Structures are given as structure tokens and as C-alpha cells.
Length: 447
View 1 (cartoon, rainbow, N blue to C red):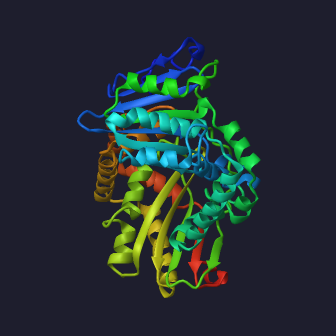
View 2: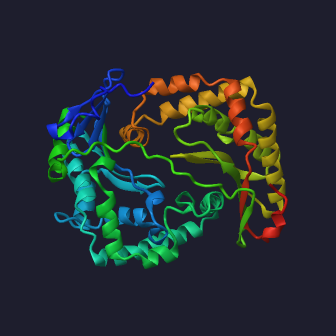
């Protein structure tokens, strides 16, 4: 448990040069701190012939002012439009020429840019991804052309009620807090953002202490450090230390206990019922993972059996959980025929109440633990997933637990642990979000 890097690694002056800090408990994972607060982590995977390289930036939609809603995601698009050395076509062609993958994604608290290539092409990938992240030109013409692309992305989200209902749930749950805003922003915010605003956001936010570089696969740590040192050369220096994990600001009283309905003449009603969850630093998150699996994480789960198998009310039904700094959410989703919406909500409430009162059976806990462990291990079979795990863990937790440590945390969960977290979360005030052919008053009293 905890990081085993040397205690002085983050306290030593970064100006003295690279600071190697390896985890002795897992020799495959190594870490080096470079001057200026940049962190580099690698995980060696002997036997594979690929390498994944990613740059994680601790910037997401949670960092945006209301007038800049969607700026983090907008910026993610713009960084691929060209640098001082490469055009957008050059960037795309470099990866296509070696059969690799280049992509990025934005979340509420971070942005990641990554490439997955043959191991022999890793030097090119490091240079390319670093150039994209560090040296984007953000030309005014590109800002204007990409604006239309993002507006189309918002329209595509709006046309998918199964996706849109989750954004509506976040808005209902967290209200005006940044966690309640969609990562994509809104039509109004995207239409109004200027080139100067996006460029200023880029300069202010993309700083070395907020960046974690991660690589996994057929990689040599020292070689990666050398490649990154060259790519970041003019950005390294000074006495800044890596930023600590993001602290959770108070979200305020979540506006739960209400219904939000978006009337659409859809063939299917989309429902999310839920409330606040656990913050990402809460040690109960492992018990929550077991609870989530048993409630709605697979074909043997309560929701799947009661709503789909026994009654045939839904094709898609599941539970979900999201953890952030200082906050979290927990909910259940179903897509059903409009005529079955009220019955589906009643069954959701029934299962939540039963588990809150009685917990899970020993068999369900065992099965939920097995799902959690299997999902963890099977999800780490390729270099990209390994890169994502170590990069995100360092960025959001400030440490990288080994797979064995994570499996041990899951194994340690007891039925009482699950019962306690269920009694807390599943009795909290809730909100209900609905997209379908209804009036909002149709769901009065459903909470």
C-alpha cells in the first residue's frame, strides 16, 4: 500500500537534475522526475512488440469558468491541427505511415494525448505527441473550422438520448458546479469562445507540474527518459515540483430530490436514477466496486435479472459510479418502452431499497469481487491500457499501486463493508433524469 518511491524524491530540488524513483515492489514500473516538475513513468512488458506513449495533463472541464465551458475539449481538438514543425496532415500521416494509433480524450479532471505504435517506432511517437502537446500553433482559422466540428459532436450527443441522459443527470445532480457541466460544453459556449481565450487557457494550464508522461510495452525506462528530455528540453528547469493530486473543492449541497425531464418523441424512454457517490480518495471505493457489480454490473446482477431477464422490460440496464476529487456519483440506467418507464423506475427503487436494508448475500459479494478482479486484470492485457493505468494513477492519486496491491484491496472487501457503503449511498436523496415522450409532472412522486 502506498508509493514506495524514496521519500526525498519530491522534496529534492528539481534543478539538480533528473530524480530516479523506482518502486521496489514492482520492478517493471519505474519513475523519474525531471526538473520543472515533469514526471515520467514506464512499465516494461516483456514479450510484446508494441509501445504506448501518453501525456496526461491535469486539466479538464472542471477547471473551466462558465464562459469557457468546453474549452478543455476544444483545446484537445486544436492541438492536432498543427505545430511549428508539423501541419495537421503531417501529424496524421506520421502515425498512419507506421500503422499506429494517435488519439486523445478529455474528462472532467484530465486530458490525455497518446500514441500506440510498434516498439521500433517509439522515438517517433514520443517526438510527435510531445510536439502536439507543447507546440500547438492554435491558428485563428483552425479555431473557426474546428468550432463547426465540435458543434457537430454536440449535435451527435443530442441525437443519442442514451448518452445525453447521463449529461442531464450530471447537470441535475451537481447543478452550477463545474462537475455538473458537460465536457463538450454547450452550443452557446462553443459559439462564443475566441481564439485568444483558447490560446490563453492553453498557456495558463499546460504546465509541467500538471503533466505526467507514461509509457508501457516494449520500452526501456532510461531510453524513454532520454527521449522525453530531448522533446521537453526548452521546458525543463526551475525548482517547481510535481503538483499534488487535485484537491476536491466543496460541491455544495447537490440539488438532488428532483426530476429533470427532456421531452423527446423517442421510441424508447431513457432513465437515470441516482445520487451522490464517493470521492476517488475514499477507501470504501473498493467495496463500492463490488456493490456496483452485484447491482448492475453484469448478466447475473440484480438489475439485469429483475428488469431484463424476468420481465423483458429493457435491453440495456446497468448501474454506474464515477469518482472525482472530493465528490462522486452513483446511479442506475435503463432504456425501456415509454409505457414501461414507471414500472422500471419502481423496480430500480425496489432493488436500491432492498440492498440498502439488507446488503448483499455472501454469494453476490464473492461474485462481485470476482468481476472486479477479472475486469482489472483482463483490462490490462495491452500496452495502451497499462500506459493509461500508470499515467492516470500518478496524476489523480500521486502513486501507482501494483496490480497485486489492487487485487488485495478487492479481496479484503467483506459483506459488512458492502452493507455499510450500501446503507450510506443508497439511502441518500436522489434525482431522476428522463428523456422521452412525457411531461415532467408524469414523474411526480417517483423518487
